[in-house]
Length: 251
Image (cartoon, rainbow, N blue to C red; front, side, top):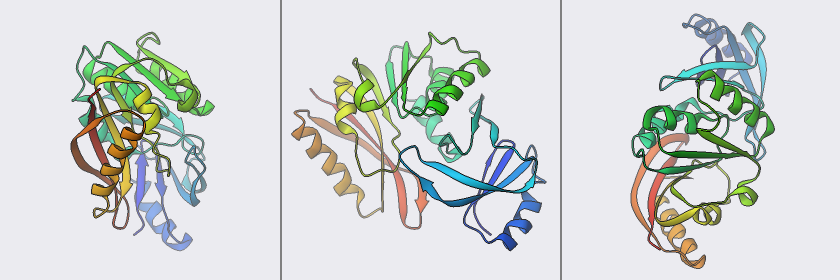
């Protein structure tokens, strides 16, 4: 049976044949809260990591109503990248943040990381940067859904390469699976003792080289970092994983 993601009221079947989709859809539509079953068409597209889907069963709808970590989110599943598989990761990172911290979330999407962090940790300041206009629209809607005043979480719409400013105690780089590291802009927002949470994508035999490459890249940028922890935080393909690399800026 093909893998499927359940995003509240919408279930999405991945990489399946149409014949198998129908059988799987009949089971998915029975699950509590699921009203729509869709199937992905093709691969994730572009730097915004969007998908295309086709309707398989149930209501014709593309807007998910999803809950995690005692928070509620709405988003269009075709225009906004979202992964429910990061729910545990978001909770874990939120648990590492203190009330006195200022937090920058790069690639903030529809606001899930910032909102979960605010709800669970209440840091003094959170800024989220997101380039996608649709994601930003849902980010603002999700602040209202979770009854969070906009002054508690600042949304900056634009490219992290152009909009990153200020210095933060914590920088979260839950970056998309792209070739570019974006480390330069994470370090731009860092001061001495800033903690960075960085997502890398590779197989288990490559993670040591990936982390060492980050240290070298930081050195080339005139900064010194120390790796504190490397944790496998999810599967993204056969033999390929998402790793969370936590490091501290030493200067």
